[in-house]
Image 1 (cartoon, rainbow, N blue to C red):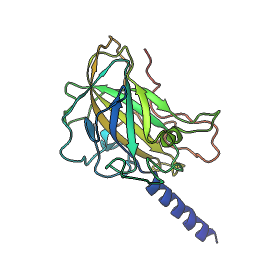
Image 2 (image 1 turned 90 degrees about the vertical axis):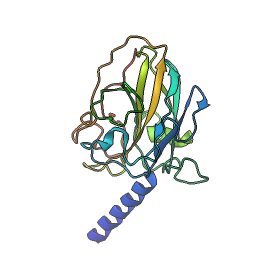
Image 3 (image 1 turned 120 degrees about the vertical axis):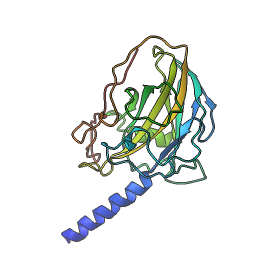
Image 4 (image 1 turned 60 degrees about the vertical axis):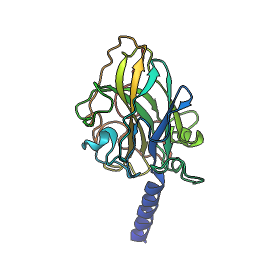
Length: 241
């Protein structure tokens, strides 16, 4: 009976993993849609990244070709609404697991990295700072993933008003913790958008590297979401002006 129970539990976790899959494939700037795959490096599958030491943890891998060469303009202080859906194709019709299965609970986070050219293929060695996180709300008991589901796949991210003008990659990430009681168990779903920030300030945020910002023992990389009352998101603190 014990073996059967473990097999059933493994099957449930496997099913949850498949349903939890999600892809950041489009965004709007101050309410204006850029279009599906425009100025976003969209992975060709909704497979998770699980190895946090891999370069794939930066912006994902195996992008739909050709990768967009558009760099979207956003003013410092503006709002980017990142859009997630169950598949790389975006919204394709009614799907109980769109934008993600609500049982695949976890945080949603966003980072910026300044780059000479937001369309450059090489994303290794960049310096990232966190500008948004939504983990577990201890009052409502809602996760960032819950809000993503409720809002139809959209998450609003404000570009700090004091960041310097220039080109950036915006890395937006949803993490499923359904199987994260040990490492590797958490599933990371991210893409990078290509931005030109205008009217910026002169801030110089402290930064981290990917890979490197997350380790197997970092807070938030392993967690038991069932009955959780608190949670610390992985990575650095959110930068504020």
